[in-house]
Length: 353
Image (cartoon, rainbow, N blue to C red):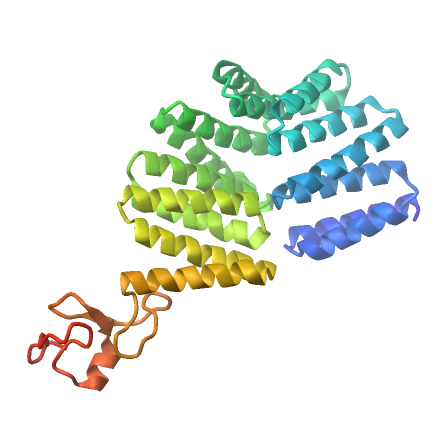
């Protein structure tokens, strides 16, 4: 595969990826990687694969392609390619919580001064280093890196970088318990997505919504937290981003715990886990969560005592009796009984249903 054909196939993959046909895009790029004889084209397609796997939360695969990319950069003997590949190594290790390695690779990037590309990437390098310092709870250095990254974003009018930095600052302030600022920065990120993010990956919207959910929960605004977390989870499920799905599940549990609604929180968790494992075809895990879901339903009596179907799985009109047991309205109207099927109390008053 020559240079021109390589370029065409990479663009084809990008078009598929932007159309949310991720699996097809990955197939196209992997075929380019196997067949292309153009080192620069291989470097570019490796960058596409790294970005795609990062957005899907497949960080081990991200690291695997980053290692191949740095070998390709060394083959090309170009400092710009080397700087970009070291940044991808830093980002991969940061995502895998190898924070010291991430910082080391970021410092290597910053030492490779003098090229146009390395100067353009300094903002992303500062952001990755800040995330690594935050992972190590070195807060002063983390904040210095985030502020530096934000200056780069403003100076270069890089709205996408600014959005990412705002999300990281939201996480930073949540950890040091300044919850007003923890909400302000992801709200700013959400504004940037709305104003400039038409062509961006939905991952940026999901990130801002998740960090807003965390801050809203800390501030006791639980309804807002639930709305944001549900929006983030919807996008995470759509993209197959399992790390973000896990973070959203934890946030859901924290919201329900804050409501003192532990049983309902467990029910929500099992329901969401069932959807995830069903989409992945993991049958054993799927069965486990289906069983646990129905155990919660039984314990909470979330089923109609007349027809036996679960309540809350789909939209149905319900009717509560004075004894506090509730049923499908249609079941009560059809059954015609004047007593509660659960507790046998004669609690249905004339004209109540």
